[in-house]
Length: 332
Image 1 (cartoon, rainbow, N blue to C red):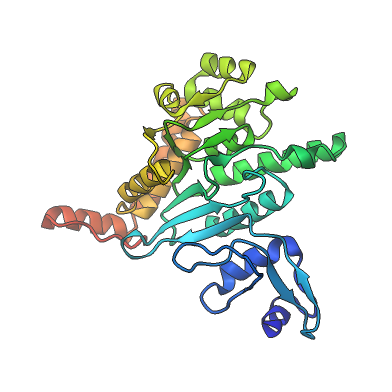
Image 2 (image 1 turned 120 degrees about the vertical axis):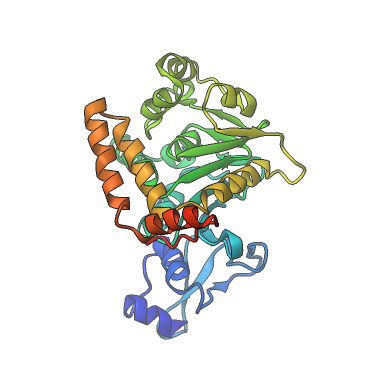
């Protein structure tokens, strides 16, 4: 382990906030972090979800790294290409604190450049909670300037999520309030359990949605309804959210409390077989086109279309149609 750390960071360990994330991404198949006693493993023997040890080069002294609050799971077999971002800050109900945001930013940055990823699902491992929003205990210790800077960082993270090139799905099996709902709004698609509660409740705390919610919600459900929801800080359940167009699919919660996740996985499996480059270009065409006039939008569509014409996937799609067989896309 000490040899590995020297190779990554020289004579000293990497900063605590990013070490666990970088090690998992770069060496998940060839190395193992050292779990502390009581560490909780992912189902199926995955990586530990609590603090790990970081040995210095001499091997005599250890320094604790931050607990894993956001993790990554790459599905395999027929689900290869589907990736799940796992939010696992259990004690604070996935509240958006410094460590959580830093780890989320690292993982999203990794995904943005991974052409093998077809669909990303954001889900929670905390029962009954998707994301409870801002970490008010941390925020209470910030002065005005620090608070403004932190919220700017949150806004940047949500933009980073919205800018991922592949389709993203938020699976809300529980509470999604404030910044938690803003995270879901930054995704392309949303599934929810009927029992889930969601809302932009910032006005009840003397604030307004500051991580993109005041802009994304009106574009999603319409300006009049968005104003009502934000002005009142109202919370809505999964069924109501479906009726107003806030979520794509809503289902009855099951005994294991993961009905929305299972629905998100079902949706991801519908997207997974399609040509990856075509799906990405379709996302770019829609995201960019919806913000401009129709003439400019048509030009954007033409530009995106031109990028799929020379791909092998387009040729495979045409050949599969003629030969009356399922296409075998490779993302090339």
